[in-house]
Amino acid sequence: RVYEIEIDKRRDDLAVFTEACPGLAGLIELGAPPEELKVVVDDHVDALRRRIGRHPDKAILGCTHYEIVADLFAQALPPGVQVISQPAAVADSLERYFDRHPEYELGSSARRDFLTTGTPGPQSDLVAQFWGAPLTFDQA
Image (tube, rainbow, N blue to C red; front, side, top):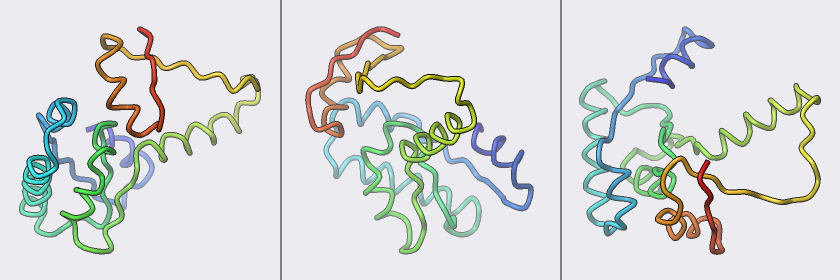
């Protein structure tokens, strides 16, 4: 319920509803075919619509894996429903944070380290689809 809690702290005039999608991240990691993923996404979007009585005005994809199937969420939702990209939202938030905290030196080496809390290796191929090049992860 992190999004519900955090948004409620800032905007008490908004109603936030969460639709858990258990198993979807695992299917994505396993490389399930788009047709199978579409059925799961459609089912969750429909479950949310039935629970709240209508489609949402905006949708936050609350798991980093869901960006991979963002197009399926966009297809399952009616035209005009904004799908908020978690990676973009996190990057924007981090940029604003560093703007407010100049005491952190960001450096200029352009070096990037990729860390995982899981076992390094299995996620590399999946993430490389979005990065556009092979990646190597280290243990966080």
